[in-house]
Structure formats: structure tokens, C-alpha cells
Length: 212
Image (cartoon, rainbow, N blue to C red; front, top):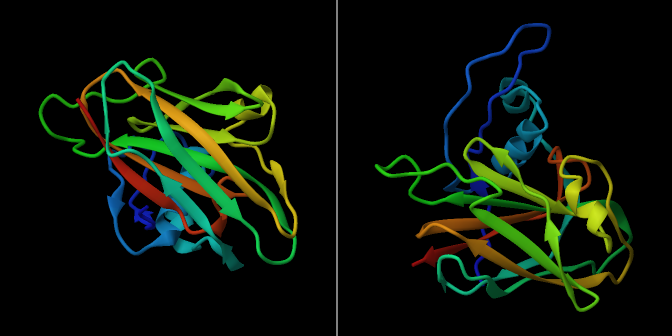
């Protein structure tokens, strides 16, 4: 298990009161900034990145334990099972939230790089004995999705506020499987946010997967 915040998530955006601004190109990198990945999630909803930098995201009063476990290798075109995300709330009730998922190619920018899209990367969550698809959207060459509750419809609302209830004693594990169609080195990032990134209830976690 590896837990670490990541930084430098950027997307194209529009300035307030102005026309489109040039699309930014950047990658997720390891660093010690929880606020930066929050900025990326906010940016995915179209909030200006400059505003996000000037106004750092609010931190929750306490961070809930979030764990991500994933196999280090996978085969292209074959579903990778054995991925598990666990969230625990040992204290008082926390706001309703969604489990946010971001997948990007680790060596992005090198020759031969291909932007990710829902046709080349697919995510599913196991619920009631059935693998249900998580609808992914494109975010500056990466893909992003969210799990909001025990309903396939809730797995398509990537930017909506709220989500599943996190009551006192909440303890849940999400079994996931991911299919990568193209060989490469990928990073899976998981985060828990009630409002698409301006606030985080847990420290984001990440895992690197080598696809052959």
C-alpha cells in the first residue's frame, strides 16, 4: 500500500468574464501538496486554475483514513482485478462525498504517448456481486470518474456534490477492476471529496501500475 498526495493537475479552463484561455498541458507528479490535486479536481469542473492557486482549497478538520491497494502489473486488454479502496470514519459523521478516481500515464510527454480516453481505459466497481461500469471523462489527457453510491447512475456524476453518507463508524471497501488497452506505466489516484475538490475528507492515495 502506498499513500501520497500528488500535485500539478491542470486542465484547460475559462477566465471569469472572458473568453477561452489556451489549454494547459501538464501531468500528475508526486509531491507533498494535497492542495494541488484538489486544484486539479476543481479545474476539472471548469474553475479557473489561477483562482484555485490564489485561494487554496479548504482542508477538512480531520482527514479520514483512505487506503488503496493495487497489483503492480497488468496485461493490456485484460481486466485487472485485485484493486481495493477502503475508507474508514472513526469519528463523528462527515459530509456526504464521492470517491474520485483519476488515471494518467506516468511517462506522459515522451515520444509515442497517447492521451487516455474511455475507449482505452475502463473502470468497474463490484457491487452486490455485479461489476458495474464507472463512467469516465477526459481531463487533459487523463481520465476521471467518481463513485457516488450503490447505483450505476451515481457512478456517472463525476462533478456533482454530495454522494454516499459517511456516518460515524463508516467502514467501506470498494473492489475495483481496471482494463488498460495500451501497454505503458499508469498511475491510479483516489480521493474523497464532497464538492469536486475544494475540500478533501481524506489524503489522496495513489498506486503505479505497469501494463505489458
